[in-house]
Image (tube, rainbow, N blue to C red; front, side):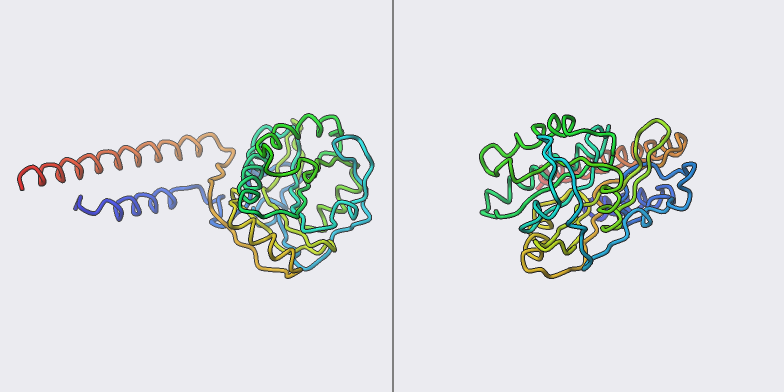
Length: 273
């Protein structure tokens, strides 16, 4: 039975997935806790956090501040295919990974000759300032080196009204907890130069997905989104977390033992032949 390690791994992986808590959905773009939070019980399901509005338009007359403190109209920035990433700059977890992944993808696309697009990070925390955005920007743009102009990635902040206009337009929901940390999904939105919402991208923002979204944005062709399961979001319950990690540990041990036995038999067979 050990001469077929790939099926064994697949079985173990499927078994692990089936043991995950029921709160994690297979196509969920949600990153964060699944537990009920006071005041947002109606948004517990991951699918409720992003309502795709492909084909609709952004409110281009909304105003924000860039990282240099300049007041800018959204329509001034979206004059070409644009990637819009809702985040908040003081996020202790997923926002940093999302922006780093996006920066790496932009670098790779630039090396392939894909240019002529704009990137917007939009803070949905109205308490964040242009100074915070200015401090955050170099953490990601330094990954470009000379492959992509830094001025093509703008880090925006704004007031609650303008933020809500944009996040409502893209169907993006978020909620601040009592400790100031936000519950929010991870989603990248590709937009055409006229502000039309073209496509949503989830997961790790891999180059292939982003390049296709930019191509469709350049053509002004709204398209169906591709949802990828690239990470698990564990629920807030500590007991469930402990169970998941125990299962993962056991499964990893079984894989190692099974692989070791298979390798031992393979070497023994070669030695005897």
